[in-house]
Amino acid sequence: MKKTPKKPIIYPVHSAKITARIQEEKKTVFSINLKLALLLGLISCMVYANTLRNGFVLDDSNLITENKIVNKGISAIPEILSTPYRRGFWITANDTYRPLSLVMFAMEYQFFGNDPAPGHFINILLYAGCVILLFLFLDLLFEQKKTKVAFIASLLFALHPIHTEVVANIKSRDELLCFFFSFLSLHLFIKYIKSGRISQLLVGSTCFLLSLLSKETAITFLAVIPLIFFFYRNENIKRSTYVFLCSALMAIIFLTIRLSVLNYYHANEIANISIIENALASKDISYESKIATAILILGYYLKLLFVPYPLICDYSYNTIPFTHFGDPLVLISVSVCVFIVFFSLKRLIKNHNDPFVFGILFFIITISLVANIVFLIGTTMGERLVFFPSVGFCLVLALMIEKFVGKQEDKGWALLTSPKLLIIIIPISLIYAFITFKRNNDWINNYTLFSTDIKKSPQSSHLLYLLGRECIVNIYNEEKDPTKKNKIINEGISYLKRATEIYPDFRDGQTELAKAYSLASNYDSAEAHGKIAYQLDPANILALNDLGGIYFIKKDYPKSIEFCKKAIKLQPDFVEPYVNVAVSYLSLGMSDSGLNYLYKAISVNPNYNRAYEILAIAYKTNGKLDSAKKYEAIVQKNNK
View (tube, rainbow, N blue to C red):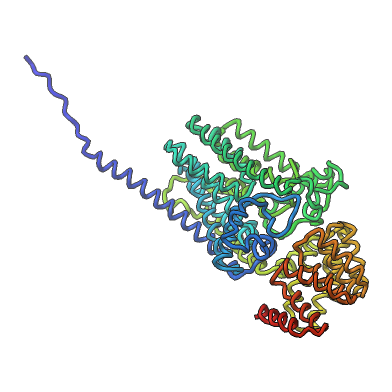
């Protein structure tokens, strides 16, 4: 009987080598991607390194240096978590809830005081983290098949000059934290879709909540998340559903906390938007004009993304005048917007995995909340508001560059060394980096920033006001030469006059103009503008107090007492009116009443030195030398 020959056993002699090679390839890809991410982080740090010498600018005073809650340090964290965003500086009926950045500011104040350098350093590191996370997210989104696109998009994002406000202004930490935690959550969600690990879902959901606690604009990700996981990456519907439901739950938790805090402090009146901050809040223009102006602003955002000049720190009234649909610029904006929508829809119908569509829809979704079309926000326009939407722009631009260069199968650094690619990317990068680095220098202090930007936006009433106020408050107080002080006051008056000529109903502008005229010893003009400020807002405590001071100088003591008492009634913890009432009573020979109000001033603010100075003078005048010496000693101690 013939034996059936046995089939030869084929041993997988090369299997170990193949496995090792695959692992090595994975390791190499990971290593290169990590190096690319670190390179992007380094570039981000380098381009903003010159902000380290900058001071506190713009809204930094509201939220850091002069914020009573933040200046309590770490002990204020529970209060920060339970109060509106601006509560530590002013009380407003239209506030928001962004505790996370304030918690960081309180911690920085605890360890560094009012030193701006640590704040700028943290902003730079956070920005580098944002860029790194953006690259890692895009690389994961495209399943590491478009690493070149992910790198170019992230590089353009890192260098884009429109982001200077976000990084150079410490206050904009809320934007950085929101972006950082939003993209960290997306990164973890994609990991969860692949692995199914619940820990990644839970940590990602927590990061999304942190992004909302940083700034409420992260709510747009409730539309971005379905776009990614139901359309672009729909490999696991069940897990995608869990991602969306967990994100929605975090949004509900955030909105519940936010609503509770704002309602408790009566700070949720959306209709109470200042015209000077957002001109579109005006009731004197038609709805058609508002929409046309909003569309023009949307077009201006797109223009700044393509050509980032001029960059301005303040776009409030009347930087962008009201317009109509017959305006050629509006028609161009409408045409561009319609083209973008139809282009994305056409490509979406053909292929829901089209990266161009993802970039465009990401831009549309994230800009929708700040476009002043669906509803009004607190400002007309702001470069910081396109921090998120610029991701979509940079991605589309990177895809266009890839299309021009042509798809290549190169791996590692060879992805980025194509001569055709370098010819495009190097000039753009150098131009962006130069503009960004130069723009950072404008943010060195308020006067440099405002005086630079007013040349680019001479009709901005609010910017003129900020520049005038900077002159009469900070620069005037720092200058010792009397001749130069007079020059500074006159400069401040000229800016404030222009601000109130552009917008006569500008309450704060009229208030500061009254103060400026008072410093210039022009008390009739000071009284006139103080009255206008008071008529515009009878609850304007600064105008009331300033009028009280003007009437005291004019020796109309009863009127001085009347206006200052109104200020005290409106805000009992405002110390200056107490002293102004006291000196008026003392001037009328009513010592007991005067001393009583000085003691009230000290009870409101035990560190207010002027109250002790006047107490010493009052007791000295009355011959009570022991009491006078007591308060003189306190004055000397406080001056040390």
